[in-house]
Image (cartoon, rainbow, N blue to C red; front, side, top):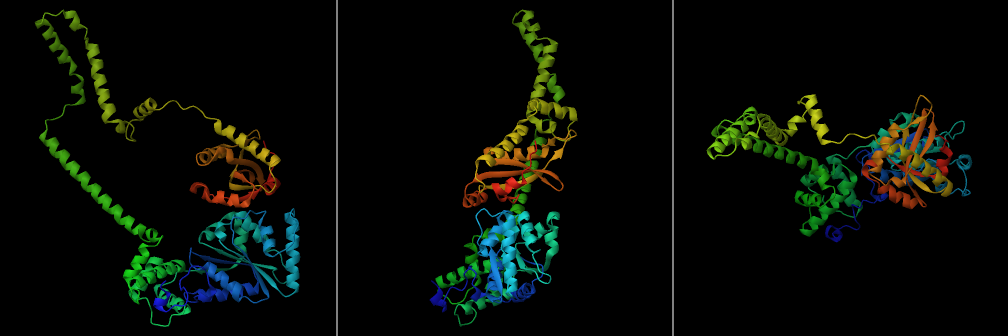
Length: 515
């Protein structure tokens, strides 16, 4: 829409990676050159880390473009690959012909034969793994094993991991230390500085056919850079919207007003300023609450001074005695039989006073009775009066057996290519008589049952080097696409466990018969 207005021949700020618009500033060009050198030498594993929208995918596309022809590259874009499937995925990308029922050993042999033939031809193979921070650790370990394929002098396969900062957290875990030790080159894509953002904007405009002076004023560049936090994708989004706002005003330079309009129209505007605005809002709310509390305290103090002194609970407790005496006097005056009045005994009067006092306490000081400062006996009495006795619940133990049995039935009746979502592995303790204790597992199941359907939870036992584990899975899907859709729809708390796809064929190899 605004392209003819500014003399542009094509959109300058599309977020789809286009190698014609690669910006070598902001240390991007230096990282690209270093990656070409590291891949050419073919030593170890290379890691590239950057925030979301920092330009990792663009860097990967550039590598595929400028690497020498002797280097053959393949691209793994799906991080949710099960350990038993990753070799098949690599073989598919290399266009290797394999039988459908080929096991891991056959796939590995085919990969090694292909890599050796490429090496004999003077060629090299490199794998680019995108979104590596979302890849299960077991899958990363399986990829690491591929780095063992080598000749006496050269590695047969080069691996480059692209990921967000969470990748560093994953690699710091103890069980993945062997992969961490194989990383020989580490690169970090830092956010662009304000000066770099200005150069980036004019570079993209020139690449799109613009020939005039800078369309963005210095103030607008500074505002846009601050809002985008130096992330290339956000710079593209805001720059595109700012140009549209300038076109709507029929002007030929972008001002801070146009950048502000672009920020307000962006999906990430709340995240940009949400923390700052939220901080001011919280301070304002605290100040208002403080004023309300102080005003209430002053008003209460004023009313207290104006009112007569309150009577104590003890005085309230002895009030019924004079009432009874007055009734006796009234009875004598009215010639009523004393027996009717004497039915209000001193003991009944005392019980009535205690009941009145307890009612007063129950209404006004319940929080005081249950507070940490109250005597323990008094707190326990209050809690005991409010809650029923605790009854031991063994339903979770029965649920463990039930879901273990459901997994056995699934293995017998479902096809080997059935896909499940592995949520986590829970370590099991052994009792003194050699039985499996599922205390932690029962706690996990109780938590999961409040978030997903219990009938879709499956369990199986497996043995690792450090002991026995119970694997918790969710769902059973005939197709991988359905499993991926279910993976996206899992509750956030379960997604924090980093679930990934498994097949029954791979699970059956780990299953151990444990009661």
